[in-house]
Image (cartoon, rainbow, N blue to C red; front, top):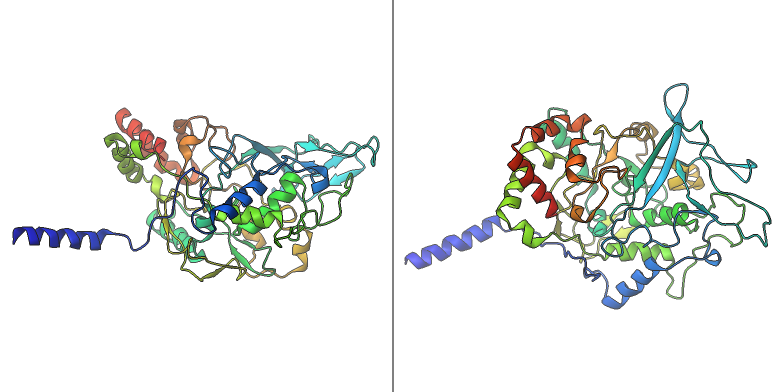
Length: 433
């Protein structure tokens, strides 16, 4: 009888405490999360790793020749130490102004971007003696670096309902008595003209859709135009017809393969062995106790199968639906005292044609309000990052923590009051992520 009662209590506890949502697949093994078959995933990864040439549309201004060049640690789709340069200045009214970057000995001015490309290429046979390298004028006083972000597991991030982020922002603001109030930013979905969704990708939350993010990266990081970003940054030194990224025999272009590859990746995996140590478990408790979890939210849940997202342009597949995953991030914009004053350049990220469309819920003042805000860095996989924070300037977890001010000031002070052994435990927990 006692055995039956014990078994009944055990079964009841399992029912009460088990999550109704299965765990999202995780790992750094290059395997599909089940959204596509193995062969398709391998083919998409090959496109992600492909080295682009001038004949593919590379340049003329660019930072990298492949997606993997900036996203490779610990495997394709991850982060890296590679950074990009962004600049600008303040106008007489104190507001941020995009830079004017001269190229070709000052005969052309690049406008509407904050990104400064590190590389340039110009076929001399067609454009003799033409030099188009970008150089930052002294007038652009605001200058900062942005480190490459992790993309692994972002299919699950894309699958989180917009309302989840709206609720997170409201709840954290209420619970912190308005000390911590993440900003939700509605951004254009390029594949659904006129529609917006809650931004979650990029250091400024400039994209909600992985396909939009892909088109942005192909244009601004590699100089390759696509159906979503069909206009070159400059027509100088351009020898390939637009759009450069044309569909293959399967009807998909490179930006489609990029988006599908990232959607099918597993979430970054924890160090399971370290996570089970008493010190790391204690550190997890302290992480929540001091308030780190207010922004570094442990668990998010994806939408149901069949749900339309990205302005109706994408339907949630079963493999991504109704899953719980653990990014340790809220994907909201916050002012933690490290902001650089740079505002999202609309032309750069959404293209010239965005101004020909009326976008639902798009608010320019809301964009301007992001000047000193940065997306919360999700901490999954942080143990594999050698450079931390949006600018990559922190090389230790301790330094990254101590740089948190602004909205996070009171949380940092709580951390500083911990005993040395407690700080070590909290850091041990972070090293398990």
